[in-house]
Length: 269
Image (cartoon, rainbow, N blue to C red; front, side):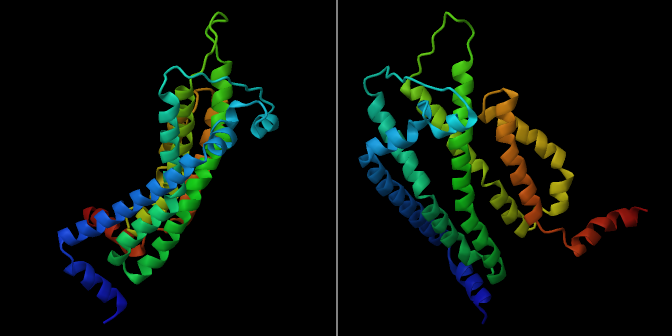
């Protein structure tokens, strides 16, 4: 009996409750990793906030010097408990971010037994690339989108009589939602490659709907960035590159499927 047959037999012998038990273990270990790393991050408050999270609020942030921007924010706290809960929120989110490779590994271990050996080789590589793409998206969101967004919003005024007073909670919401959105969006090529291996998406499909994808990408860029054209183009450029990279890594439709799709038309003629 080959290894593929053994894996298929083991998966087939597992009941629904067995699968549920394995899934429960996967979720438990993932949450445990997030919790442990969150506690560690919580203990390094000064470094996390002064050197990382709040760095884009200061005019000496290296991105502002590179892009010749003048951004300087004075954050205020409006509620007595906000700073403590912001600390908890950021610690948990960084716990998720730093434990992401472990979570991907746990997901891989959960689905691997259901795959054949040839499928494992391809999907394993995709899962390894998923962590890299996630962190690349976070980095672009951090060094490009967040500074550009702050520069736009701080410079936008409906009247000179209105003075911007930025709350801590408002800044943290924009910061975390922006970088996490880009981290998740950058998983697009990994998802496409997996769907391609499952026979759900092919290169010709991606080429056929390229125009629709461009419109969708521009809409996504408009949602996750300020609505000015410059910010939209900065956000849309890496997303368009991701789409083209997905097309490159997609395999074409097998010849037998093309024949099957052409049979009804031939019969009709």
